[in-house]
Length: 520
Image 1: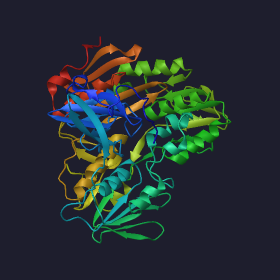
Image 2 (image 1 turned 90 degrees about the vertical axis):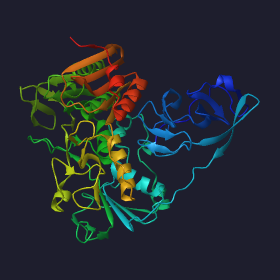
Image 3 (image 1 turned 180 degrees about the vertical axis):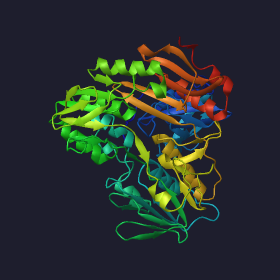
Image 4 (image 1 turned 180 degrees about the horizontal axis):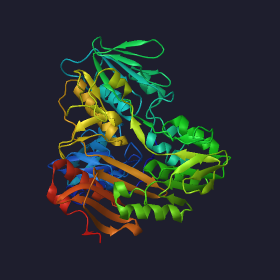
């Protein structure tokens, strides 16, 4: 994974620092033996952990402290300050953790501590099968082993690459600024060491589930017995249905192989057309501009992202892309594609030797439907992510779960949601009773601007803005009546973290204080 050790600054904790220089309830940044460290004093304890998030290298000293937890400001990973454990995705690897000593009015950080191993308590299944090698499937497998599960663990994946960091495929990797070694979620030896049988079945991870016989079958004739099953089959791109959509220079982007193919095609391309002004479409546009291609974006809507983030953010994102040379063709659709051009419904002809479509995805529910599981625009699960069949769980893009805040059932296609659901499902497979009370979070990258989104707003009647969107420094709250449904931030990572915690706690007063005056 990307990221590196932060430049060292602050005191040398090994040599000692006066207690008066380490205030209570604040992450004080320093270093020990060449490693960046944060020290936190709270409730009579003094805790020391690594200062660099193990996901993308975010600076934890700039994050949010909440009890014994530190939240990363970049992508909202969480770590236990007492042990260093990564307790919420998108980080999986623990932070280094040190012993601390106080004497003579000074604080000294000493030797590193080892994260204790765990053994799964109580009765647990002899075998677990995970169908799907994406975010939710990997997170579940990793958590099962981290929580001490010793039984047979099989992951069926349709992707030859194994689990990869999918958000990066449309961002830095596609732009050419992230090496491929950052892309795997774990190296091959991880699966060997953890005794996770990663079975690659190209095309479809599984072909059938026998819920009575508790087996999963694959197209190549293999059968895998299970005591507990997790379905994490994810989503597939919606294909454009116009003449020429199957030409060799027309791509969708979902897998590492897709991203590789676009990169290869871009080496000899000059003009690209991106069909769909979605998050993935616009991230692809930014990445292709980084490769110096001329880029046009075609979208049905009048303003990109406005239906998800509001007009203020939508207008900003469009202007940002236009500053970088992207040309928009909005309120338009594609009539046909040829080897040299894309013809729009209004008759415009856009020269193109590379076309990428990003018009949405649909959940892969055919396997669940064939098995007789309850469906409702996704696979229906209870608060513990168990489907209508006992012992069968679902997580990620396919899962429709009861949201305790809205009282509605949600299905969310966000990377971090999928990972955290995989972690929750793993704990419940081992006998936990952990409800899925996730507050959805995602981030989108456009050139040097990162946009963070917390919550779930499908309809709202008021948009409150604090700061200046055009200056890349703002907090935008989407509200329905007195309820704050979502909070969007640019350049305000602390506000995003505070909004997430407030939503988790149902703190309406704290949420009401977020955002400024309503837009005219």
